[in-house]
Amino acid sequence: MKLIRGLEHLSYEDRLRELGLFSLEKRWLRGDLIAAYRYLKGPTGKLERDCLSGSVVMGQGVMGRLTLDVRKKFFTVRVVRHWRRLPREVVDAPSLEVFKARLDEALGNVV
Image (tube, rainbow, N blue to C red; front, side, top):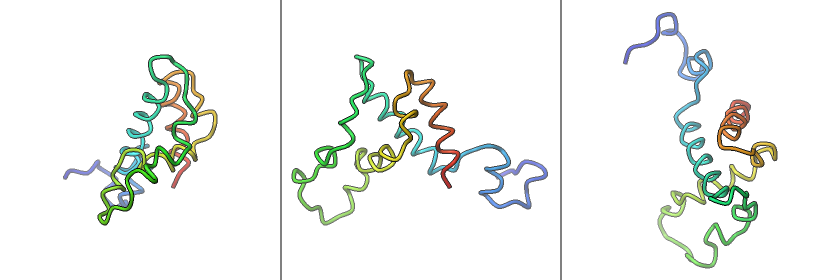
């Protein structure tokens, strides 16, 4: 892997910060949150706020207990906790482009 000249001595996190980039984990989370916004906004353009707030989305009572950690990989399990922590101005964004911009700012403040 080639490094950008002058950044060889920096740690991974410092290089990302210097270049204004998110870590791989944050990029995955960003993609998941964008997918959730698209799903919730839907063709009507109205955000269905209750969809990611209840235990029904989490599959409680429906799936029972899985002996493996497969459930952790479900989209809703990966996203719900993070979606609930987003500031209201991010969740209520009027368009996908505004959502992305506000999401990037919110994720930039998360360590």
